Image 1 (cartoon, rainbow, N blue to C red):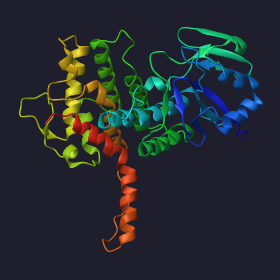
Image 2 (image 1 turned 120 degrees about the vertical axis):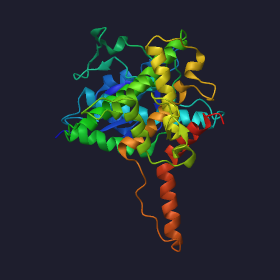
Image 3 (image 1 turned 135 degrees about the vertical axis):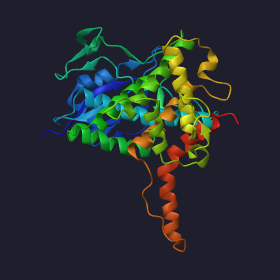
Image 4 (image 1 turned 60 degrees about the vertical axis):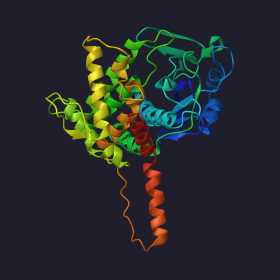
Length: 368
């Protein structure tokens, strides 16, 4: 079998510091040896990659999505799902860090950074082709001048939720390479795709309240797809159930002490903080999509420090924790085994650090 690596897509809004490797698929910097080997074999690819700039003509080296040639099952859906996996492992974590460390610089916070450029070198490695719902065509590399999107700066992928990434890549391989077609996998990757688009910029210079509300609606859809049981409908309760399944790092987040929205009469049942927050997102979604009266407080009620639009990705990460059953499975050693205790604590913190920071960001968003 031919195992050469092939460039499948270009991401001009993203700078990759290192490879995000899925074994037979990877998101890599332009100077990755596999990309360079492909450029040596196909000079038009090298020329194509060299012709990207920002809106002001400053050259940039885009990230490249590569796949092993000749692997069955790696079609467009699989490639897009891998992109969705990486974005969902980066955006919630980036927004959480931005909330906890507001002076830490501009984090990778919007999924536009993972936009796949529509022009790509064809299988002939000679001409450029484009095929979208709006246009189909071909052209020559020598006339090409590619640009990153002007509404978002070029971002560096330098922080990613490794715990979540490992779990999602395992499911990705099982579904697309192993050909497992179960409802839970279909729901997962359909939900990740919705989350990818829910995490986009709500608009450009014309963004206002209605655009933010639309993104809130997409987030609720991502939650409901993820929690869909397959045999019946998803709703507010299926999402609550998913959030309650999560293994929490912080007692202030996981304890059932918050009166989360219920459709019945008060007093509402006590649930974890995540359910309390999701209940607010759910109600805001209803107001926007049903045409009810909305104000800025619809998306940021007076008891929140941050907008529902902003912290929805972190909430979605907790839903994935419950869906995937992410919990540290190491066996705690006896207290007198000092070295084993230290090793256990290091492994536990390494596994839980990403969710811990996301929980901290969610905790901070509630005014006390």
